Amino acid sequence: MHCAAKLLHMRELRTVYFARIDSLVVGPLLLAATAKGLRCLHFYKGTLPPAGKDETWIESPEHLRPYISQLESYFRGELRSFTFELDLVGTQFQRDCWQALLRIPYGETCSYADIASAIGRPNACRAVGQANHDNPIAIIVPCHRVLGANGTLTGYGGGLSTKEKLLRLEGAKFRLKANPSANSQGDNTSDLPHASFQY
Image 1 (cartoon, rainbow, N blue to C red):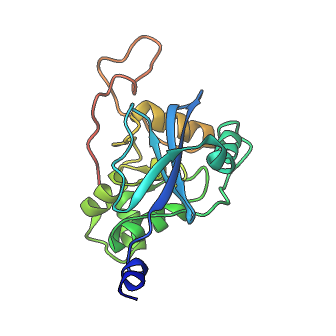
Image 2: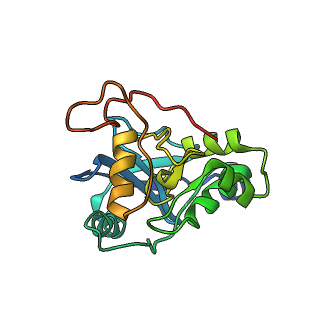
């Protein structure tokens, strides 16, 4: 009986399935999902996120096929809202911010201050910016739709040129920052190495 009781209290390993895809719009992406839904969508830079406690990660494009299929439709301009479940892991404040991001309609934008107001924390603009930075599910949880207070592109984990591509794909309105080193074709976003958050 002692052995059986011990076995009942052992933690069960949770499987996280992942796959890498190459998008023509934004480059390589890493997707991972649990039985609860999509866990992460990152701009892939060659490494996996650290596995959580009691998790095992298994590469399986087949398990990610429903998510990949909708993403591909989005990149073709055929899909405006995603219908799969999300497994958002974070603090309550982060989850509140991410839920507010999910309410920004396709093709529209808002500011960090708008998100802070939407979650009832109007003075938490900097914390909202950090929650955006920590967003584990890029594109789907659309932090690319958040702009600086003056409507310009500001900090984005995938880079400002990626943020611009996503907003252009959705037909959203935004302003480009002036860049003295812009080339003659008028591309004034690709040479911005780091953007600061503007609240």
